[in-house]
Image (cartoon, rainbow, N blue to C red; front, side, top):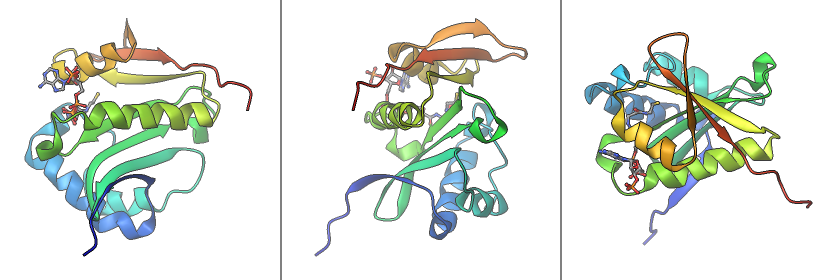
Length: 159
Ligand SMILES: CC(C)(COP(=O)(O)OP(=O)(O)OC[C@H]1O[C@@H](n2cnc3c(N)ncnc32)[C@H](O)[C@@H]1OP(=O)(O)O)[C@@H](O)C(=O)NCCC(=O)NCCS
């Protein structure tokens, strides 16, 4: 019998239906109030899974089911510091997955030469704020109602 394990990977075209299913789980739980990097539609899942370039769209999955989704974007527009976004499937929360996945996102950003990452968060999104603060994010006021967080990434050791 094959046993499914947790995997962290970059999205690929074959993941589009699984990503659309993940988006539906966020919308059903009302998470699009706090997390709305793009529409949560099948068309958007198809688009995201076919992106090529430096921007990264990454997932944690088990047995073909996406449990967490994150992106690092801005490089393709010429920014040095990418913007990070993250969400965990509602039924997979509270198990440490976001914390582990954030470490992966930070490592992927550092691997592509980012000195730091930025993100935006609503002040009332307490779970996300607590997570980010525990990882070292520092806040500054944003241009809209969201806070802007910045996290310095450690310099890579000489390989
Ligand atoms: C924010 C989110 C990613 C956390 O995912 P998670 O897998 O439950 O988080 P973890 O289990 O890894 O917990 C990591 C930390 O988050 C914080 N946290 C998680 N759930 C929390 C809650 N209900 N209340 C307060 N803090 C919470 C804690 O600091 C926790 O660390 P601890 O367990 O050491 O106390 C998840 O709630 C989510 O996807 N929310 C909807 C999308 C979203 O808002 N994304 C962020 C947009 S800026």
